[in-house]
Every structure is written in C-alpha cells, then in structure tokens.
Image (cartoon, rainbow, N blue to C red; front, side):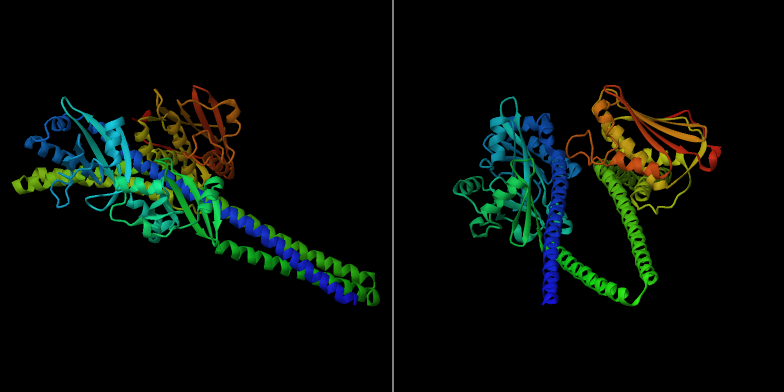
Length: 602
C-alpha cells in the first residue's frame, strides 16, 4: 500500500512539474514572439517613414516653379502645357516617383507626367479627392487611395500653387506597393491599415482590402465620398478579427486571437497602424516540449531517488563503508564532468550570441547608411550613362580620340563603384573570429571610406591626421573596422545639423600602445549619461534612431583584443572616443604609409 501511494505521489509531482514548466515556457515564448513582432513593426515603420519623407517636400518645392505657376495662370496656353508636361515627366524619372500632375482650382488635371500614355491624367477631374480639398483649404494634403484612372494604389502628396491670377494644386503620387512585396518575402504577417481599419497594404494577399474588425456607417460614408478604394467592394470582404481583438491590441500592443498573436503599432502617418500577425503554433510546441521534458525530468529524478534509496539499503546490508564512499566519489565525478560539459556549451552559446549581435549591429549600421549609399551609387551610374551616351555620339561623328577618352572616364567611374561595393561586401561578411597582426591605419581608412555616404548626407568633414609608420595590432580586421565605423557614424550623427560639422581622427603610439582618437564638434554628452554610454540598449538619440548597442558592442570587441575604450565629452563642446590597443609583438612597427599631412573629406 505504501509503495502504491509513493508511485501516485511521483506521478502527481511529474504532472505538477510538467504543467509549471509548460506555463513558464509558454509565457516566455509568447513574450519573445511579441517582442519580435514589435521589432519588425518598428523597422517597418522606419522604412515607411523614410520612403514618404523622401517625397514629402517635392510638391512644396515644385509649387515655386515659374513654369508651373504660368500654366496655372493660363491653363489653355499650349506651349505652357507641353513644357510643364515634359518637366513633370523629367522629375518623375529622376526621383522615381510614380506620377506627378497639376490640377486647376476646380480639380481638373491640366498637366501630368503621363501625358503621353493611354491612361493619362490630363483632363480628369479629381476635385472629389481629399488631397485636393485639403491643399486648397490649408496649403497641403496627403491621402492614400486606389487610382481612379489607372486603378493602381498610391500615396498622394499635394501642395497649393498660388499664381498671379489663378490657383492650382501640384500632386506627387508615391508607389507603396513595394512595401507589400518586401513584407510578402520577409514578414508575410505584416500589414498596414488606415484610420477606418481597412488593410490597404499587406504581405498576405488574402488580407488586402479587408476591414480589420468591421466598418461603421461613418467610415463607409467617408470611403464612398472620397472614392478611396475605387472598384473594390469592401462590404463583401469579411473582417479579419473581432472588435475586441482590435481594442485589446491597441491598448496592450498585442492580443491573442485563437491560434494567432496580433500586434499593432501606430505608423505615425494619417492615423495609420501597422499590424503583425503570427501563428502561436511554435509557442505551443515549445511549451509542450518544455512540459514533457520537465515531467520526464521529474520522473527521472523520482526514479533516481527510488533507485538510490534501494541501493543504499542494499549497500548497508552487503557493502562496507569503503564501498559506499567509492560509489559516492564516482557519482560526484560524473556530476562534475556533466557540469563541465554544460559550462562549455554555455560558453559556446554565449560566443555565438555575441557574434550574432555583432553581425546584427554591422547590418544595422549598413541599413542606416542605405539611403546615402544608394545616392552614392546612383550618381556614378548617372554620370556613366551620360559618358557612354557621349562616347556613342563621338563614335558616330568619327572622333576616335574623344570616344576613347569618354570610355576611359566611364571605366574610372565603374572602378570607383567597385571599390565602394568591395568595402561594403568585406564589412558585411561575418568575421571568422581569428586574430591576426593587422595594420591599424588600413582599418581606419576602410572605416572612413564606409562612412563616406553618411558624411555626405550630413554635409560634414572628416579630418584624418597625418599617418604614422605602419603600426600593427593583434585583432580581427572586420570587427576592428566595425568599431571605428560605429564611432564614426555616432560622431557624424552628433554633428548633423550643427553649424560646425567636423569629425577628427588621429593616431598616437607611445610605450607599446597605439591610441586612435575620434573627436566630433557635436552637442556633447551630459555627465549623467556619460557613465552609461557603453551600457547595452542605452542611447542618447531619439527613439527609433538607434538600438543603443554600438558602443556596448565596440567596448566588448576592444576588450577581447586586450584594449580599452574611453569616452570624454563636454556638453556643447563635442565628444572624443579613444580606442587604445597594445602594439603587436610588444611595439612592432613597419614602413610608414605614403606621406600625407592631413586628409580632409568635405
């Protein structure tokens, strides 16, 4: 009887342990999935804002063009119409906007970039669109809708034009379907819904143009009046979730709907909201696995206890004290061996996590510079296109000398692009983790080259001090380049918008230690924040501009190389980051770099 009760107690203990583990693992996996969704939404919001901001000021600038203002004053003049049509087509091609068009004071299109296509906007009246009414009333407007003429959706940005005798509106249409394509490939559960709760961009095509939780009468009337979704019958589309899910997700950031976790984040544009939905199947599988393992572990422990109890009884009967001591020593040895193996695995997992974090930080730095890099590459491409066109013209005219000169210029442009791409490919690849004797000046030059697009974007200058004789340090080249690039990007961010925008880099070698100092003329860091700048996830930048990992990762990398990273700053006077590393071989130096007193990128 006592044995039966003991077995029941073991079974109950296993069930309790399994259930507790199931709950703990489920909550942990659920929270982790919610955090991943929020991170994806924050990144999607940043991309969305960047794309819209790229075109926001275009209509405001175009409204001051005298050619467009003359057309608004006299819409019936054929020379003005054709001149503005071609101007809009040129601006569309150069900015990659979807379309541009000009409306008179009644909303009728008097010029458009697609004037020469079958589906031209010219002659169409868009006075019913909110972006036209808002521009006339307040000076500017924005509105997302399905094109009434082309049937293609887009985001419309408008600005009022005040001519001498007439009034008009210039409109830029931005194609946002690229976001849906990107989400479809990388995060199919991501979507964007408008203020009325209608999903108008989605990674999952089944979500497109469906209400999130139903439409009210006011929303239906607004949509019908603006013809926002022309040709789409929203009444026939079933809601994705219930109103309770929408309320819970809006209040808490995420909610559970059946087998799905739904997260919502304000997009910061026209009361839009970003939505992310993921299945809970992985969470449940993880919780089930944890519960089963915990229950099995409890049973094993209980079984081990039973075995040990029986064994002690047998040992007391048959073995003497020496045999019992030998068994305990053997058991302890096995436990220590297992503990050693577990520690080795933990150390390996920690190294892998650190390497992944370092790689993520490098890719984040490249992502922050992506717009500037695209600009850096697009200029040589445009120059090469014009050079090749010139070469073709010289070839037709028989001028061989000028043709060769133009082709040489095009080749030089290609080489410059290849050098930039080579730097980016080298920086983005994962570091093998092996240390070697590397020239520290070459790492600095590579980091300065990678930071060049960000420098151009900030309209700053990077002043590199005179090169010392080649100084070698024991480090990983890619990781050391990442440290210098992180510090340079932070410095360029600090001087962006300042009257004096300068970043200074200089190298000093003394007593077997090489010190690289990077100083900026930014706003500086307060004493309260200075002691925390190397802490993970701490950042003095505005929310969404950084994860607060750059200096923390850089500090860890420099410590791995046996060096130190120090930050000095005075509010209003700028910041200096000093990286000190021991010279390889106790002070080994090689031949000097090509002589230069100063390199200034401006």
